[in-house]
Image 1 (tube, rainbow, N blue to C red):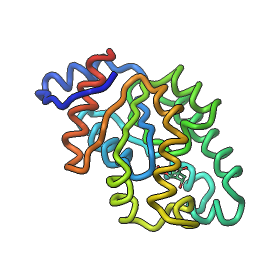
Image 2 (image 1 turned 180 degrees about the horizontal axis):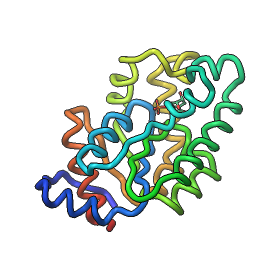
Image 3 (image 1 turned 90 degrees about the horizontal axis):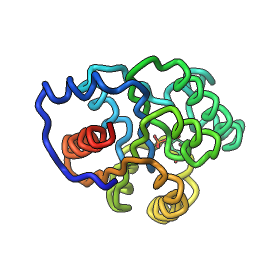
Length: 191
Ligand code: S3P
């Protein structure tokens, strides 16, 4: 389902929120805005927000770049899978969960999310991903090479996974409020 822009009243959003009985999981590439959109979406729906990457860092007691550096990507992916499973298990009702860009590419994690959550794929053009990821220097996968080339390649490689999400929202270069509106419309059509 591709979603166009729309606007909702506070009353309509409250009505939507009452009907949400499972976690809302945001998936998609680095830099697409999963955390920013997720926080605002959670606040509009009046439900909690959690960032899976932050939970991984909290459990490991170290930052993601350090986890990659000290233990490698496979170790990180294993922790990521366990943390997301825990976050989904412990969710009672509505909660917005932002996942790291590679999480939904793990078959087990993807199956769990698709089974237990409402999954929203946020997608952006490569230019937007390049621009947004350049604001922070905390992504190990963008360190070894040209970020634009890496982002473009990963976006293509991961598309078959992301496209399994029932809701697909294009996050443009403009303010996140436009994306939020599209996400709300996607949820209302899906419910
Ligand atoms: C990754 C994305 C990152 C983080 C890690 C790996 C990826 O999260 O989980 O650096 O594989 O795309 P964001 O998508 O929040 O940047």
